[in-house]
Image 1 (cartoon, rainbow, N blue to C red):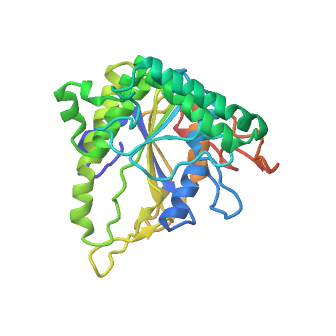
Image 2 (image 1 turned 180 degrees about the vertical axis):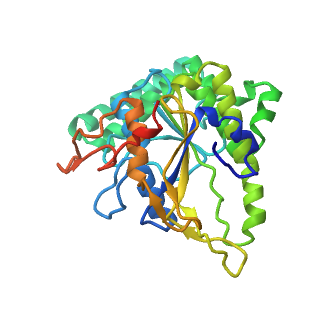
Image 3 (image 1 turned 60 degrees about the vertical axis):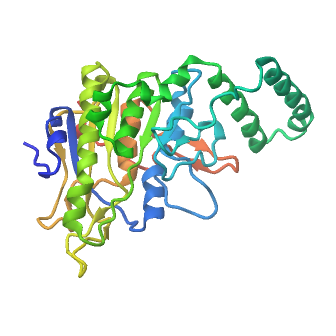
Length: 339
């Protein structure tokens, strides 16, 4: 049996399709550095920008839908293509209810004038792009090409969650995180390779017990709805869902009745494709202060995702400066939670 918080009753109904890793540990206890490590498998350095994991997936697995971007990030947070080409970076969506910003043609510009302006812009840029075949220059050109291709495609409707019936919106909840998960389901349904939804706002330095109960409401509703929606649409068996954070909270209560940052021991949940339902991996001590069995580092979590997606974690990839990197650094996949 898997024991979950009383504040996660909806998620608890889906643990037959999910596994819990109870022994995640890190040495980074500040938001920016910990978030960077969780996303890239590397510690933050001033000399290089590492690709976020979604960018690696976008590059190595490619698009499944030639029109929609392969990596979409909803709700903010860290995410960059790093030293990879910008085309592998995330398309950011701040407000899932607003959809993809600046993705419609202006109604007052006739199609022939729009195309004429594009043609003139291309002519003006040709000499510059030929003279300076640099990554930053290609990024600018690629952005325009991708945006126009999407504008002209019916696939752009995937970003419009207003097309969903009212009871589906209610099922996911009205929070940004809930509606973000709904948008994620629509994007996955339209063959977007990698979608990340960030909730944020989990710090409970003050009034921890009230805050945790409140915070869990939209997490429980949204993730529970996502798992149920994917399963009933026949998509869960080929979609991997991962829920985690950059670190945990202190086992001890501070003078403000809160909990502070604690990277030494925290948890992650995997569900869906390739996951052994009902599995539990690792453990901490009785007080949740230290991992005592099967420690898992952030790079191990990413190595697990890579393994399930069919991406090699052993291959060496080189930055433009010739430095060698691997997708999940030296991470090892958690084989015990895989079916």
